[in-house]
Image (cartoon, rainbow, N blue to C red; front, side, top):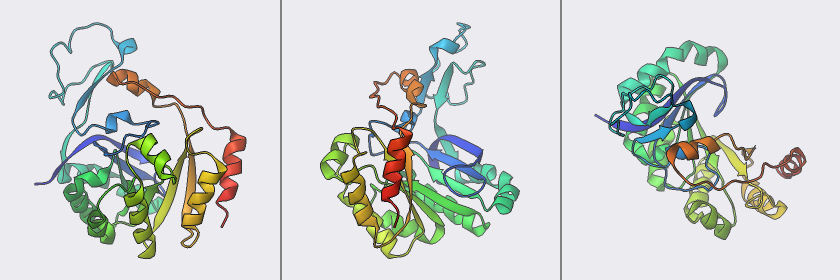
Length: 267
């Protein structure tokens, strides 16, 4: 029986694809983006998150470890992030909102972390969703063997595909890996006419130059996919403290800057 490490399942979401959606967040990522707003997704193993300001000192969590995945703190001060789910468990949650998917042209999105690192589970749950006429989306950074894409392609209605940076040196410095595989996979997806929506996080002093965005635009122009620019935000910074992780903070791009960059992607 396939199982996956998952750290969150959000119902009634209006992002990460069309309509009303359920988003399933897989744990584990093979990139290390300095601006990651879900740092709890990076490790594939369960982790303890501790919010000191919420703690009342009741002592109930004394001796609790990452293995105690069923532990619940009454004040949400200590949380065990991530646990194993079966396909049946996840699909049971997904199908609860089928009426909302049907009436809003929504569905389910598999995200992360990098959901494609757990390819056997992902393929099985995608097949089950398609058998039940549920729209499927896969949110990926693309740093995955092409064979994984080929395996899930028949069961995926939409790929939400991240481009972190086009310049290879910038990419390697910012996320810890080169981007050749990512761009090659994207080109293959576009050439086989998969439904792909490009998402580009805009990080000041990293990838927000006009030259960088024009390079991405030139690469995409033969295929003309939808492009969404996502401005950096600081909403995930508190999670780093809860995990005891160091953080690299960036400025938030101005509205004027976002408007300027969005104009570049007019085909």
